[in-house]
Length: 382
Image (cartoon, rainbow, N blue to C red):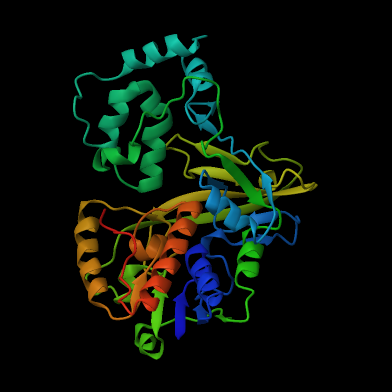
């Protein structure tokens, strides 16, 4: 059976590899001139630094199966993401932890007294938080909310925090110790040769034919036994119901001598600073030595049809629109929608890989059982 896979990010590449190893004939189509999607990495010719072209990507997971799987295609070095933040004229440690609290309030609190102190700052009049703003005010109080969340959120999402659902801030975003590891995953690292090298090796199989800089139209689906589509779900249907809301990013690069900021990522929380964060890419590979450096300033804005989509908004209108696209997708014959764009969900790399592995297994089981492959292996409306 000939199978078409649209998109050469982790979703498409994992499915391509898994099905090729099971004897399927794979043709992979990527509209960009390179592999790896938004995880694409490339050496900057001027500085020699490995550039995370579409923004920082730190691989982290507690899933041992996923960690073992990704390491089959390239070596990883340990990397701990220790983010700093510029706010109100000072530099702080993120995520908000005991150091941040003591810095912001000029105190020397212990874990227990800090917990009591933060609880006293929360707005007890908010008993059932419905918005991002209410959730923050209820659990961390106005000082922390305005220092680290309000301005950054408005820049990142382009809407008032009061218009975002409370679910975005799912848990109390405060640690009552000095742990400044941005993630809590068991395994954390960055590939020694970059993510594109990982994808290249993943797709290095005689059963996979790659078409770069090649768009795939819906009309071509009839030429294949099945299609796995990891592009934007609304684009597949030519935006017939309207365009789903995404935020996109613009990266402004500059090169410097020496060390620019002394850290991989620094957030800029104040609203009068136009960028959301600065990434200094050589710090993502501390095992390398470079005399020069390259930084990228990230600017967030609403995504247009010709822009690269990054973060699904999933506001009320978007969810209603998504329901209509999901209904259309389920009526399609021989197409499965996968990944962040195909399911209109924000997914970390490890979740993308886990879901892609599962999708490949479902397809093989369905084909062996002469059944019908579903349009989604994960409910995008959940």
